[in-house]
Length: 320
Length: 150
Image (cartoon, rainbow over all chains, first blue to last red; front, side, top):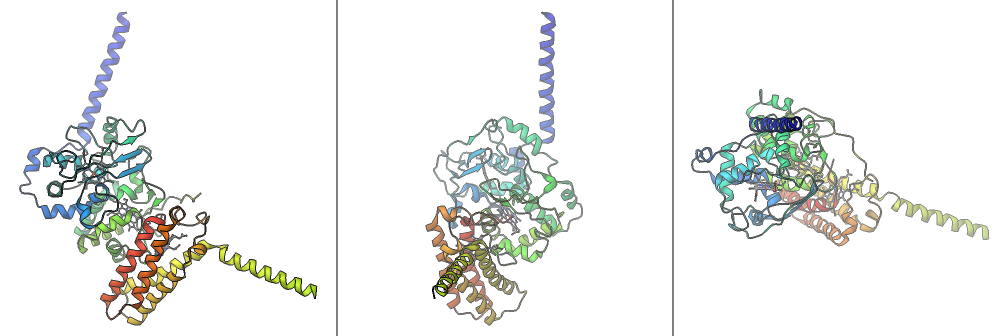
C-alpha cells in the first residue's frame, strides 16, 4: 500500500520535474513575446514603412481573397483555404473589423502574433502562418507593419475553423513544435556564418529572404513534423499546398548557378527567367509583391542568393 | 493492275499512318519545342530591356513575329490531346478538366501576340510595353495550367 503510494508519488514528482524542465527549456529557447512597453518604445510608427513591409512579407497572398488584384489586396477578410498534408487551414480575418477581424487588438497583440506566433490569449499559432520567418523582423519593422494593418479597410467576414487531422488538431501540441523549430538556433550554420562577413548588401538580402520575404517557407524542404530541413536551405521542396515541387534556388549548376544577379533581380521584378520562361503558380504572387520593392532591395536578395551554399536538388520524383 | 492498286493503297495507308503518328506521336515534344521557341524570342527581348544587347527594332520585330506565329500555330487538339498529361510534361490536369478556361488563356496569348506584332516599335519603351502585355498572358496560363518548375 505505502509502497504503491510512494511509487505513485515518485511518478507524479518526476512528471512535475519533467514538466518544469520542459517549461524552463521553453522559456530559455523559444523567443518570448514582446511587452507593451517595448512596442511603445518605438514611438510613432512609420505607416509607410509598414506598407512596404506588407508587400515584402506577402500578407495579402494568404489573407486577401485568392487572386485578388490591386486595391482588393488590402481587404484582409481572410477565408482562403490552405490545403496541406496536415489538413485544411482557414486563413483568419485580420482586417480591423471589430466583430470578425482583429479591430480590438492592441499593437503589441499584432506584433506578437506575427513575430512570436502567439495569440493574445497566449496560445501558439500553427506554422502554416509563417511566423518562424517573421520572427526575424526587426521590432521597429514589426510595429510599423502592425500599425499599417490598422489603417486598412474593415471587412466583415466570419471565417470558419480549421479542419485538421489528429494530432495536428491539438493546438497545445504546438508548444512542442515551437520548442523544436521556433528557437534561437533555427538558422543553418553556414548561412549563419554569412552574417559574420557579409557586405551590407548581402546582410540586407539575408534579412529580406530569411525574415519578411519568408522564401524558406516554400523553397526549403520540411521534415515529417513540418519543421524546416536547414541542411537543405532553399534547395527545393515538395509544394506544401497542392501538387508539384518548388525549385532549388541555391547557386547550384541546375538551379540559379547560371543566373547572374541581374537575372535574379529581373525575375523578381517581372517574372521573366533568363531563357524567356515566365513565372507561374505560387511564385506569381511573390513576384507581384516583390515588384513593389526598390530595385536596391531586389538586388540585395539576388546577392544573398548568389552567396549561400550551393546544394544539389533532391532527385525529382517522376510524375505518375 | 490490281497489284499496283493494292501497293498504292498500302503506300497511302502507311503515309497516312506515318502522318498521324508524326502529329500525334509526341504532342509533348511538339508543345515544349513551341514554348521553347516562344521563350527564346521573348528572352531576346528581355535581354534588350536589360541592356545586355542593344535596342534593335528589326530584331525586336522579328522576335514579336515569332511569338505571334508560334502562338497562332498552337491547336489544342494536336498540341494538348487528351491523355498527353502522362510522361515528361509539366502540363497540368487542369488543362483537360477546364478546357474552356484553357482555351481562353490561349486566346489571350494569341490576341496579345497579334496586337504586339502590329504595334509601332520605335524605342526600348515599346519593347518594355510589349513584354508587359505578353508576360501577363504567359503568367496567367502558367499560373493555372502548368505544374511548378522544379
